[in-house]
Amino acid sequence: MSRALAGLSIALLAAAACATRDHQTWFTYQVAGEAATLHARYGKADGLLTRASAQAQDPAEHARTELAFARLAREQDDLLTAQVELAKAQAHADLLPANAPERLRIALEGAWIALATGSPESAADAFARVERESLVQLGEADPLTGYAAAGRGEALRRAGDAEGARREIEVAIERFMGSASIDHVKPSEPLGLVAALTSLGRLDLAEGELDAARTALRDAAALAGEELGTNHPVLADVLTELALVELALGDRHGGRPRGGPRRGDRGVAPPGRAPDPRRGDRRAGALRRSTVALTRVPAAASPRSRRSGGSARRRSRPSARPTPSRARARCPSPASRA
Image (cartoon, rainbow, N blue to C red; front, side, top):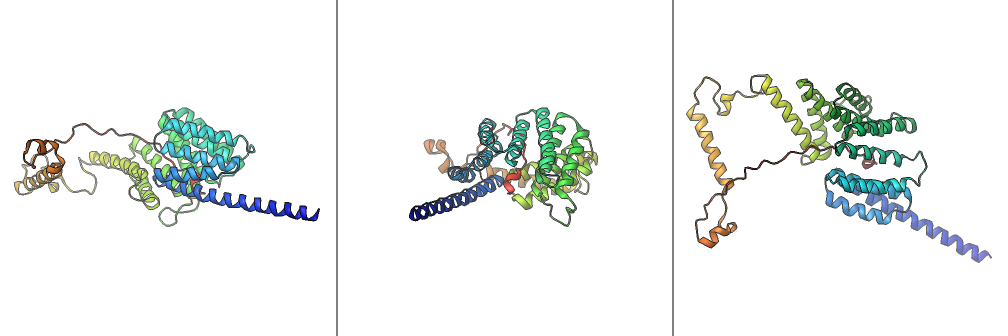
């Protein structure tokens, strides 16, 4: 009997050690996959999350991994796949207790997907539910409440409720900042603050508050560049909004941004003055030479030149088709910073 009990104890200890090892392996792949998604390394993220899914053991782990897949698909604008992965995450979360934080994170991601599909009213309602439940279950200090407020503010802005949007965005900024100062102390959730400041800048731009919009967007760009790097799509979105503000400021100040060079200093004659040939023509000639260098087709890359034996100095005509711009709904998930 004692030998049987000893063997059973050894087997249970071995199983527990194996489960612990599997959990640690899952956690490693999961966190690495979420970080790769955050930094827009989507191929690497997919591989890491696939390995995490193979190591997941319980419903909470499966729910978090499927939620990460949903966010990965949303970041790539594959909203149909995002909805499918979110449904899988919800199926696993249904096996968890009613107050499990995974349920709130899944509901938050569902609200972002609804916003991305062009349903700002339903998204605002979903964000509001997440905000109320997270305040009750987690408290105001939890970052999830800030993300919910930031998302609701952006949804209300898109729905045309400027007053409600400003109120929610300011609440989100206060929750992310706390007692910190953006000029001296790094906020606790810089990526959530980027989303809130970007929404605030868009709102100020729409209401004609150009100086305030520029301040908010400059702060958002600085945080995004520090946290995500200079080649991230989030930073590109913020800089696009900032460029629109600078253009609007230029129109307000006589066709140029405040503090910027005069038109004549850029080789373009101001109204009522003839162009300076020593300046404008020289720069125009340099522009023509650089355009020729960029559009020239090498002989080895031109099938027509090889067939006809023509000169390798042919120039390709640049395409006149404009590149469509596409608005993206981005906000980092609080699960990615776990």
